[in-house]
Image 1 (cartoon, rainbow, N blue to C red):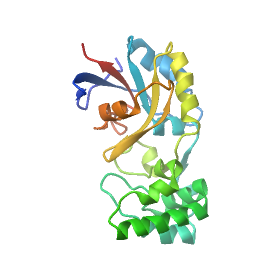
Image 2 (cartoon, rainbow, N blue to C red):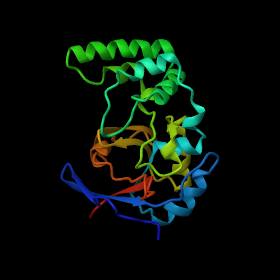
Image 3 (cartoon, helix red, strand yellow):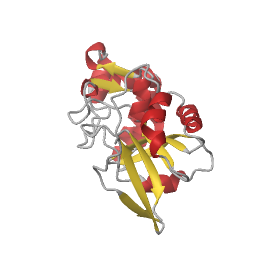
Image 4 (cartoon, one colour):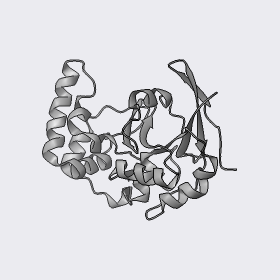
Length: 230
């Protein structure tokens, strides 16, 4: 049995109770087939009107977008800029030279420099989030290594997934047209990076997933099912 409920099982949104059912899977590596994984670990549990959601890190790792720390040599600019990033207890973000270096490579130096200027102005005006607003999705979705990440990814920098909408549509077909989301959810909030169906209500879905029901360390549950409780 691959279904596990190690976090809070349900959440009430707009007067409706939704179950969030995490599903345990093997650790995903570059080249692994998410289609086969869905067939084996998710499809047997899906019911009518469910919505499947999976972490952006899982998708990125399958695409080979996880880079070992010891293969990243930070530039002088990455060393400099990372010193000015506010460190959070919820994650490393771009506060270490290696993650900042990957942001520079992903987004381009000019964009990250302009984002840093805007972020500095935002701090002066007591406004949060200006850096990532300018830097964009690719910078925001970079995950740095941390102790509670499952090995070996506790020593990797993971970039955002490529073509998340396309991934969601492909996996939806595997699950007989059940809607699929690719999500970036953490304790600070979240984003829906990809969705299989345009009619999905992102605002409501983010509220359902707001408390981060997945577990990507020892729980190894990077996939979940949203199910309306009747």
